[in-house]
Length: 284
Image (cartoon, rainbow, N blue to C red; front, side):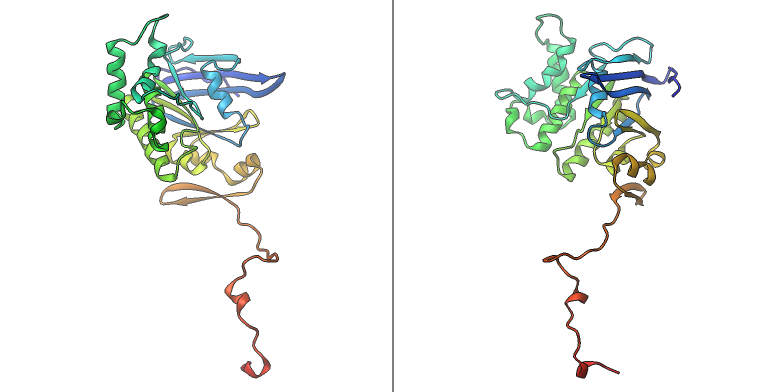
C-alpha cells in the first residue's frame, strides 16, 4: 500500500501503524490519511482491530509506525479526543464535573480548572441540550443522556479530531440516530474530523464519507461506502453471506436469507395447516 501523502486538507496521516500483544500482531501495517472535516467509519468483525487502532492513535497501547497531523508534526495531548466504548461514569460526580474532565489535557501539573475551562464546559452542555443536567449526578442519567454527556466530555477537550469507539452500542435505534445526528451536526459546524468504529454497517454507511474495512488487523478496503460494502467482500470478511440493498437512497446490509426448514415444534405455514380434503370433498 502506498504511503498517504500529506496535503493542506489532511487532518491526520497514519503510516505502517502496528500493534502486537504478547508477540502476536493484532494491527498490521495500517496506512490511512484522514481529510479535515470528514467522517471515516471503521468497520469489521469483532476482534478485527477497530478499537486497537483508535487506542493506538491516542497512545493507550504501545505501537510502532507513525501518526502525524496535517502540519507534519506528531499529535499532542489536545489534538485527538477519544470517546471509549464503555466509558466509566464515576459515582458521586455531577454532569458538569464529568464534562470538565475533558479539559484535563489543557491543564498544567497540579493546576485546577480555570473560569475559561468552566465556560467551555458550560457552552458544550448548552449546545448539546444538557444545560439543565449540569448539577445532576451522572449515575442518574438515562442511556441516551449518558451518551450525550460522554460526547460533551470529548468535545470539551476542543480537539480537531474526534475518535468514537462504538458510540451507540448500548442505545436503542431512536437514541442511536439522536447521538449520531448530533455528532454530524457538530462536525459540520466546527469542522471536526470524526473517526468512528461502528458495528451496524448500514448506520456506518449512512453517516460516513468513507469506510475502512478491517480484517484480522489489516485493511481490507478503504473507500466510499458503496465501494466498500460489496456483498462478496463483506461476506468473506465477516464469514457469513450478506445481501446489500439500497433503501430510500441508503445502503442496508442484512444476512442472506436462511434456507427454509421445518423442525419438530416449529411454526408451520397456513398452507401446511390446511386439512387434506377427503375423496368426497375433492372437486373433479
